[in-house]
Image 1 (tube, one colour):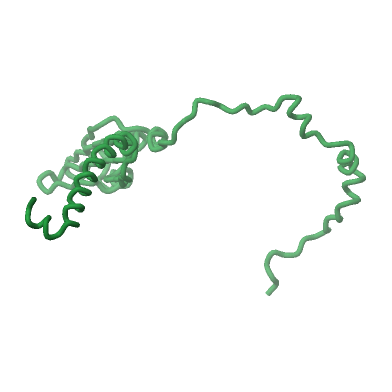
Image 2 (image 1 turned 180 degrees about the horizontal axis):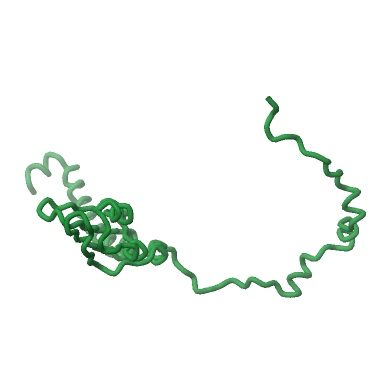
Length: 187
């Protein structure tokens, strides 16, 4: 036995406990690996660039000025110094549980007027909003009609019918005022 363990017997106990603990940990991790795999850390939603809809692209016409294009699409994400006659609109969104989306649109100018544009097929605003909704959809639609038996459960009793008649209702409620006070105080 090494000299350290002879002089300090508690050190031997700590070493044995650590060895047994490590053995227990390996069994523990294998049992809980499936449960821990279901737990994922929160990932921040990352949205970058300009969302360009199908409706915005449809509004672009050759011959528009740079200002008109900017009013429709917004300021471009990339203005390349080496390509002054080109604006690049890039949009990316990365969300947990949803495939990342990336779209590109490039607008080309001839001087101060738009010449053409090219890029990905853009979704309409409605389609884009639908892709953002990640709630689970249950296939089960609730019934919106009550059966006769269910309606009978909530039917008024004879005493309530008498109290709710025209003469009974007007007798139990105070009369409505002829005029209402002004909303603002007079100056």
